Image (spheres, rainbow, N blue to C red):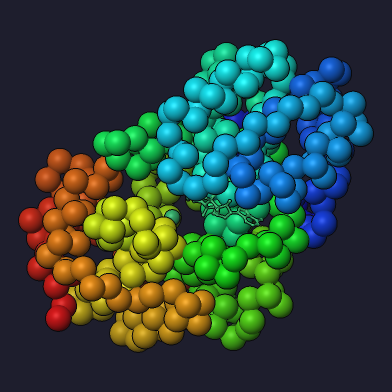
Length: 353
Ligand SMILES: NC(=O)c1ccc[n+]([C@@H]2O[C@H](COP(=O)([O-])OP(=O)(O)OC[C@H]3O[C@@H](n4cnc5c(N)ncnc54)[C@H](O)[C@@H]3O)[C@@H](O)[C@H]2O)c1
Ligand SMILES: [Zn+2]
C-alpha cells in the first residue's frame, strides 16, 4: 500500500491500494482509537448499492455502529436542502462530536459530506473514501467542502480537512468511460502545471497500466500545494485552477449540463495555452502536446461557444479581484505561473483566431 501524508492541522494519511474497501474499518479505527464510535456513511444512489455494504461490514467488524444516508446521484443534489436532510439523519442517529462522517462516493458526495461534517455540532471528524478518478486525485484531498447555490457553484462552503482518505483503485472499475475520462482532465492538469515527467508518462503509456503511480503522483502534487497554501491565500493553490477560469465560463454557458467539469477545463486549458503561446509566454509546441493528450482520453479541445461569450462569462468569476484576474499559464509543460490581467483585456488576450 502507498501512503501519502498531508501535514496541515491534524496530519492525515492518504492510503492508496487495490481492494482495500474491505479493510476500511481497520484503517479508520487506527485513526479514531476511542470506543463506541458511530459512523454515518454518506453516499449517492449509484455508489451505495455497489460499495456501502462492504464498508458498513468492515466498520461493524471493528465495533462501530453505522448508519447510511443516501441521496440521489448527481450535481443537482449538491445543495443546502440535501445538507439539511443529512443533519436530520445525523440527529436521528444521535451523532455526537466524538462520532464520524464517512463520505463514500465521488466529488459531490465528498464535498457535501465534508460540509455537513464541518458544520454539524460546529464540526465533527470525517473520512473520505473517494470512488471517482476526479475525487481520488483532486477533491478528496485538501479540505475544500461545500455546495452549489442558485447564485453560483461551490459558493457556500468551508475548509474542513478529512482525518483520513482511503483510495481503493478497484472502485474505478465500475465507472463509465465518460466519468473516468472526466477525471483525466484533472490528471493532465497536474502534469501541465507541476510535472513534465507525469505528462510524458501519460503521453507514452496506457493509463490502465500506470494508474497506481499516476494517482499517487497527482495526490502528492495536490498535497504539496495544499501544504504550501492551505486556504488559498498565498497564490500557490491558485495554480490548481489551470484551465479552470475559461472552463468555468464554458460550464456556465452550458448551464452546468451537457458538458462535464473535466471536459470544460480541457477546453479551457487549450484556450489559455493557445493565447499564452501567441503572446510568447509559453514555449511553442505546448498547445499541440496538450491537445493531443486530451484527445487520447476523449476530452474535447474546442467548443462552439464564442470567445466573446467565454471572455464575458469569466469576468464575474469568483476568483477575480476588483478589476483584474489572475490567469494560470504554463511557461512549459510542468511549470506554471500566475499572470494578472485586467478584466477588459481578457477578450483580446484569448481571441487568437
Ligand atoms: N473539493 C474540491 O477541492 C473539489 C475539486 C474538484 C471538484 N470538486 C467537486 O467535485 C464534484 C465532481 O466530482 P465527481 O466527478 O466525482 O462527481 P460525482 O460525485 O457526481 O460522480 C460522478 C458520477 O459517478 C458516479 N460514481 C461515483 N463513483 C462511482 C463508481 N465507483 N462506480 C460507478 N459510478 C460511480 C456518481 O454516482 C455520479 O453519477 C463537483 O461538484 C466539483 O465541484 C471539488
Ligand atoms: Zn477542477
